[in-house]
Length: 398
Image (cartoon, rainbow, N blue to C red; front, side, top):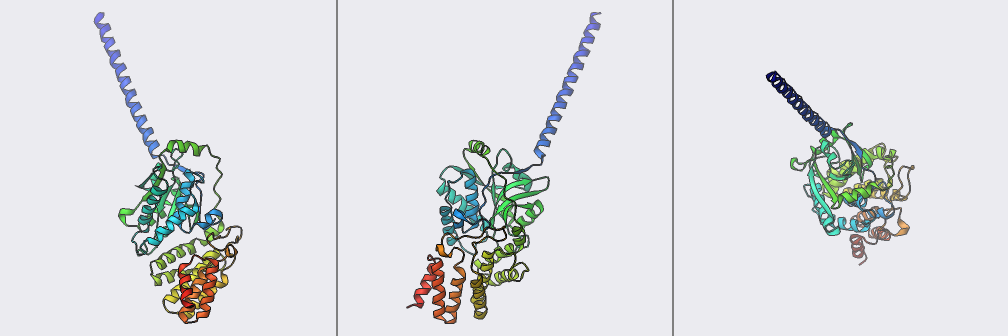
């Protein structure tokens, strides 16, 4: 009997151990499954309250901004510390850096990442962690999620058809990622706020970048990240403004404008003219393109024609630019609030000095000095800081 009891006890013990073992194995696999599911869980999240600065709201203090990198960095800094960064100061820094840059630089993105790090070192001392990270589209959620709430800066080509010789990459502020629909959401200085870019388009854009520079994002985070996230979470933040119809109508022309501007800056006049003339001939040039860019397109074509010594056409386009050069600070179709100029004479807030500057150059090249003097004076009335114009005027008045 005792032996039988001992045998039954051993059987029960083995059975219990087997059950426990099976339960442990089950727990392990359930945990592994939950881990994998959680790790691969697709996220749809947009960070609320990242400020937007651009040609689409170029007014008030933001009207001082003359470049996209200054505008993007201001957006991120204003998100972490509202009101602390002064637009005039950040714009001055990046204007100086642009003036010192080599126009033939092979990679504007790498150049600007260096400038951003330099600015934060000088302006914010030791308050931020700034690093470049490589992220595939499905890895962007490491920063853009409800816990980290960290916008990213990324320098990308304008389009998948961008000529390889134009290594010019405008900056975007990435504020959201929608993995189920495979797209990111970004603010752009030129193309508007909370614009959606598909993963497929994103990958095609990266293909226009040198392999060692692909998928590179710039992360800017305060060192007291946990405390800052808690403070941000307590803010009352409204929804982002919807994208306007003009942003959509202008998109193709603005992409051509950016590339034309990049080619013009790099002194590739033939390529620049191709882009600008394409815009001028577009059906929406007169009806849809926002006035400040319409004036700039004609002005730049005039400058290109003058560089080619085609003075009659240079005069034609400069004159057209002057004729359209008014009220660029005024709203348009309730879709665009107008473009203000901070660094100009208050009486000329609605006009640009550029058409008069180029018109003066054309008249000077034609030997019509009195007309050149008149145009230069007008340019200086609008913006007295134009040193090259001031010098040309002095030479003509000797």
